[in-house]
Length: 600
Image (cartoon, rainbow, N blue to C red; front, side, top):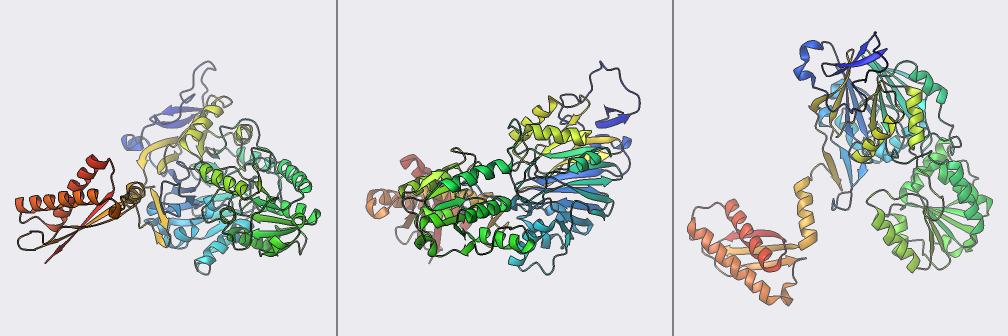
C-alpha cells in the first residue's frame, strides 16, 4: 500500500509509484501540512484528534488527550518540578481547561506507570474532570490511590485495575496494553483502536532483558500489535540523543553489590523513591552483608511500604528498620541508609543530612554516600552544593560519573529503532522531551526509516494531530496548554506576574514609600516614610535614603499639582515610574517600588 500527500493529508492509494520516484513525505516533518479549515469540503466525517497537553516542552508533566466525536480518553496526568527561576513554586501541573469544558465526554483516564511525571497531577485533575474512571496496573494504581488518599479523594475515585491482557471499550475507543520496561515495575504501552485508525502510545520505555522485579518487554505482543496496522506511533524521546542501548538494571545491580561488599564504613545511598526494583535489590545486598537498612524521606518510606503490601518488596523481614538515632550508634559496617534527595531537593532528607539538620542522621568521617541517579537538567548546581557539604563533613561521595551505579529508564537510539521496526507505523510522532530531544529523535529515525514514513513533530503542548480515513495531518488549531503553578495550597492562583515580582524582589529588593497628604489640596503633610528590604540598609545609607525621599516628595507635588483630579491608581503608577527611573539612573538597580498614599 502506498501513502501519498493530497490536500494536506497523508493519503492511502492502492497503486504504487515507480521505485525511483521520491515520496512526498521523505525527510519532512509534517509542519507544512494545511489545516482542514481551508480544505473542509474534501474531508467529511469524524476525525480522531490527538492533543498533548503536557510533556512536549519539558521532561515531565506528561498528559495526552485523544478525542473522537463525543468521546475522550486521557493518557497519564503528570506533574513537573519547578525550576530555580520559578521562585516559591512547588511544582507544575498541566492546563486541563480544554478537557474541563468537555468533561462529560471523558470515558476514562489511562496510566502507563506510576512515576510522578505521569500520575503526580491526579489529585488536581480528577475532581475538575468530574471523577472519570481511572485505569492502571497494580503498582501504578496503588501509588495513585495513596496520592488520592492524602487529599481525601480516594473514596470518590473510580479506580479500575488493568494489566497487559486487559481490553477496554471506552466509547468508540478500543484500548489494549502491552508490557515494556522502565525504571519502575509494571510499565505499559497503550494500543488505541478507533473507527478512523489505530494509535500506539509507548509511554516511557526501554528494553531490558534483565529488569529488577519485572519481566522483559513483550516483543511478541508488540509485534502482533504492529501487524494490525498502526497509523500513528507516539514514542518516548527522553534519551533519543544517546546512541546504542540503555544499560540493564542487572549491570547496575552487580556494581552496587560489589561496592556494598567492599565498603567497610557506613553507607548512605540516595535514589529516586520510585525505583522500587533497585531499592529492593539494595536492601537484599545489605542483608547479604549483615547490614540493617534505614529508609529516610517520606516518599521513600511510603513507597516501600506500598511495595511490601503489593508484593514488590522481596527482602527478608527484619532487615529494614525505622529511621532513628540508632543509625548513628550501631557499628558503621552494619548500617545502610536509603534516602531521598538524589536531585538536591531543598527539603529532602539528603540535603538535611548535608546541612547537618537531619533529626536522626549525622554525617561523619568514614561515611560513604552514593548518589544512584543522574541529575535532571537544572539540578546540577544543587547537587554539587550537597556533594561539597558532604565532603566538608568528612564523607566520601560516589556518583554515576565514578562508576555505573545508575541507569536510565528511557530507550536509547537502538531501542527506539527496534520499537519502530516492531510497530511499523505510517506516522511517527516523538513525544516526551524537550524540543531539541524530539528534533534529534526525528533526524535519527530518518536514517533507518522507510522513505514512505511520515514523521511529524508536534512542537508545543496544545498542538493537534488529526487522523481520518483520508490519512494523518497536523492541524493549525491550538488548544490552551499553559503551565499551572502550584504554590503551597494554592492551585493556579499565581501566574507570570507573580513570578516576575518575586524575581524582582529576589534580585534588587523592595522599596515601600508611604506618603501622607491632605485629600483636598493633595499637598504632603510630611516627608515620605521609606521602608526597604533587600535594597539598601537605609540606616547605613542615610544620604541615599534622603535623596530618594526628596525626589519622591518633588514627584508627588508635581504630579498632583499638575492634575488635581488624578485618581489614586494613576497617581501610584506615576510615582512608581518616577521613583524607579531615579533609582535606576542613580544606582543601576531596579527594586520593586510600592507607593502607599494615606489622605487626611
